[in-house]
Figure 1 (cartoon, rainbow, N blue to C red):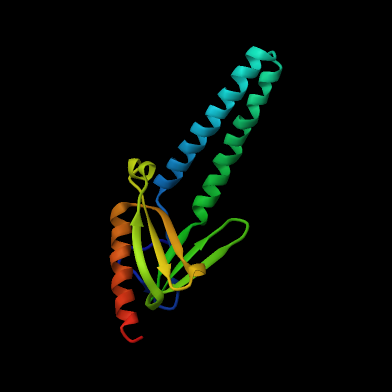
Figure 2: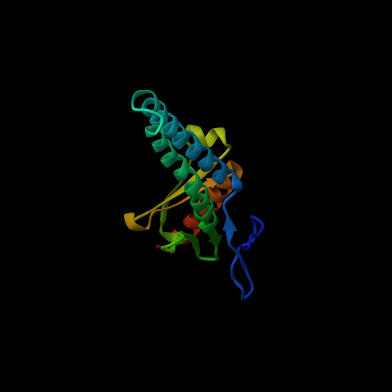
Length: 167
């Protein structure tokens, strides 16, 4: 995955410069996975072990297997997210099995907002949500550093205003 500095828009003739998501998003998602499925394992194993017998407590292994599987899948999903700022549009690419690439022309953006829930704020993360006239082309970039999210919002808003002036 190619990454560039915040000011890089596009290299000459080499196509867009892709930027991946920071590792804090992966850490947050993995922690949530362990907390929720770990609680499910204890909540399943303890009552079954006490009420039905120790053999039934083996059902607690199912959420633990989910943790192992989810650990790997979360990393694959995290690696699939990337975005690129080009001269006339923003590209967002994501997906492991079904690859999805969204192209949002700067002139079509109506609203760019930075969002951050309580868990994201705890991990020092924010997301950028892009709204366009067509609801199907709304796009988001999750798990950015707050400074990068604000820089991206300001840049996209500035470019959007410049491109829509001629409409």
